[in-house]
Image (cartoon, rainbow, N blue to C red; front, side, top):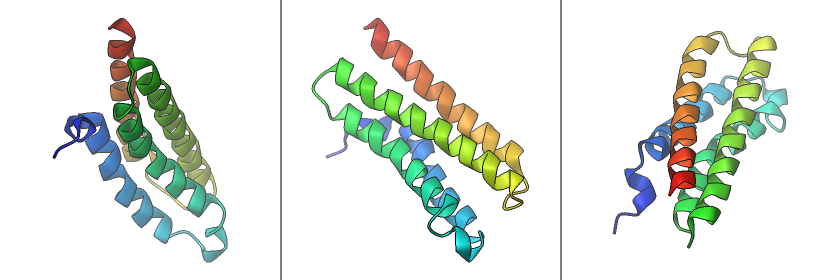
Length: 117
């Protein structure tokens, strides 16, 4: 049985972002394994996870709460990508900014839609 969150483009995009972040962090220095490396992975996984958990809740109010958490995790990941760039672990921040901006916009749109209903 397909769950309703799997049909959401924002969930699909955030799911696609997770393996990209895993691949990116594999290139980080070994001393970052328990620092930025793991924080970025947790933040990336948190985005689609919270979208899914919220969609499975009983009310729009609960769903909204989890969408806000997902958006917060996305902002956390964006910050961590900028930190990785400033540390020299990442060169192309423009492509990451496009991906995170698109997900942020979709999350904001879904939040707006739920608040209006």
